[in-house]
Amino acid sequence: MAYIQFLGAAGTVTGSKHLISTTYDVSDKGGFRALIDCGLFQGPKEWRERNWQDTPIPAREINAVVLTHAHLDHCGWIPRLVKEGFRGPIYATQATIDLCSVVLPDSGHLQEEDAAFHNKKGTSKHDPALPLYTLEEAEDCLQYFKPVAFEQTVQLSPQLSFRFVHAAHILGSCMAEIALNTNGQARRLLFTGDIGRVRDNQIAPGKVVHSGPQEGETADVLVMESTYGNRAHPDTDPRPQLANLIRDTVKRGGSVIVPAFAVERTQKFVFMLKEMMESGEIPHVPVFCDSPMAIKAVEIYLKHSEEYTPQAAGLIDKYGSPVTWPGFTFAQTPEESKKINDSKFPSIIISSSGMVTGGRILHHLALRLPDPRNLVIFIGFQAPGTRGAIIKGGASEVKIFGEFIPIRAQLAALEQFSDHADPPELLEWLHTFKNQPGVTYLVHGEPAAASQLRDLMKKDLGWNVEVAEYMERVEVN
Image 1 (cartoon, helix red, strand yellow):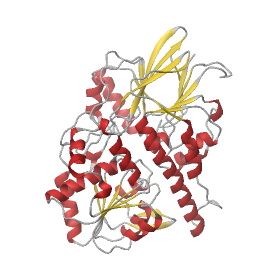
Image 2 (cartoon, helix red, strand yellow):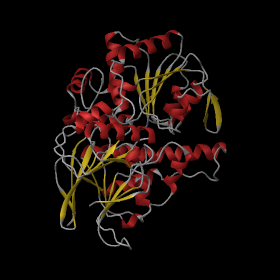
Image 3 (tube, rainbow, N blue to C red):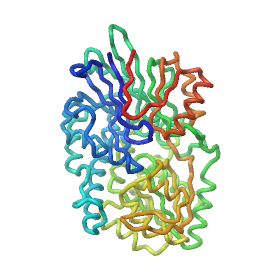
Image 4 (tube, helix red, strand yellow):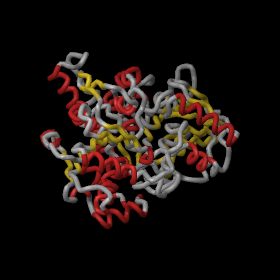
């Protein structure tokens, strides 16, 4: 009997890993095993520590990985999987592969940088502090990636095949439609990955990838994200509020610090800043994008114009590549990053990681959080337990590099920038299904979000919906 096992993103938002096995015997030998996504755990220590644990099924016994997109909580554990002995193909869209070729080595590089910093300062509980994987190990895993076009069917084994359909979350993002033959019967499984906003308009401004996931789906088993399962996005245009925040901060001599995911969110935000500066809504101040992958990520976005919204295409036609804009600086080296901190004048600093779990944003926040003239704007989801969630939640201090940093800077959050569909948008999409799935499992959400979305789906759709549990095995009947 075939089964699905939830090895991550169950009971939490991060660490997406869902195993499909075509056999369910006592020994669990034979058959074919595919992993849908292979992401990093982020947030509370109990989840982060699982990044250091071996997979329940040895990595060498996993036959393939099917990857939905290039965010670290979906792809960031792949180098570790290969380090443990995985040697199978990793299937992804070409845009996802292009982004992973930047995101994964950067992740390894940042982990090496953080480990070196902790060893130098003696601020780690481990001696020596080690990276989960290195830049070299991240680069090594890229040889196993295989490009798959949208709508192309790939036969993994006699019992298992898949194809990618659009998820409209970030560049290259997709859902995985799985065709499974078990006990002589055909079953269709749909793994959504992360689902993008259903509509394009002024309440979801700056969106790069075209709106709306694939409609008219058919699924016997649906495995669906629930990140925003208990709250709806604001229905107002964020630009007037953003403009006021930036103008007020500049007037008092402060700087704006924006923790932002290096993929999608940074590109979206810099185009919006450019448009607002050119229109006179905000003053022309220096903008620093502090991420080693920034220029490469921009180049990848410019390469894949087939996924643009009309709005994104128009902005690129009008303004060209952000790396050529006067007043916009993309810092790649540690030395260039340190120079940003030498600036004594108001500026806008966009840096990763988006949840403040690591990376160069830590240095900028450690320096600027104590100053009430400064402003920190959150434009993305903050998983519980992350530094981003602690800061956003109104704490008086936060631990960075082993020291408690007082939080005196102004804080703001703009939820309109999210690339995750909210409950009204999810229901709008689910109503387009051609059939009612036999069962839906909710993943990639905190318990409160997943349970509220489950109740909403049962009431509105009348579907059989369950919240997946970590390490749970469910048969595919």
